[in-house]
Each structure stands twice: as C-alpha cells, then as structure tokens.
Amino acid sequence: MLQFWTNVKEELEYNLITQKELASAIGISYNTLQSWITKDRLPDAEQALKIAKQLNTSIEYLVTGKNEEQKGIKTNLQNMIPKLNRLSNENLELIDVIAGRLK
Image (cartoon, rainbow, N blue to C red; front, side, top):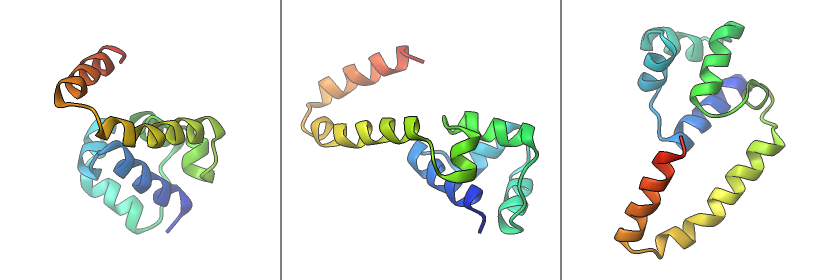
C-alpha cells in the first residue's frame, strides 16, 4: 500500500472519520475512494488537497508521513488524554462546548 493511503487511514482513525464520510465530504463515491485505495492509485492534486483538508493535515504529511507542526499538535493532544480522563462529565461537556466554538 502506498504511504499516502497508509497515512490517510491513520488520519481517518485519528479524526474518527470513516472512509464513507471522507468520500462524501470530498464529493466522490465511496466506491471511487475504495478503488483508489485497493489499486494503490493516487488521487489528482485537487482531490488530494480536499482529502488533506478534511483530515486537518497537509498533503506533505499524507505523501511523506512528515510534518513537524502536525507531529507537535498530535503529541500535545496525546499528552492531554490522561488529564481529560480525570475530569468530571460536567467539565468534559464544558470543554466540548468551548472546542465547538473554536472552529
């Protein structure tokens, strides 16, 4: 499998997005996305950009697996998980509301 698709699958899991949701969000059929993945075909530049945007990452990361800025963000988020697990449901709901307003 191409590094591109390995990274896409990793980002889908990280972002809690299904392949069907990704396909719909970028305006292609699920079958088209599956065909690209199973036949190891890269999308054209426009579609690759749409995929990267939906996954909140860069084309650079999807192609090479390297993006220092993205790596730092993920590390920070992973470090926050134990702290979040200790919060009450009320505080988690508050964080969810605040995060929703940041979009």
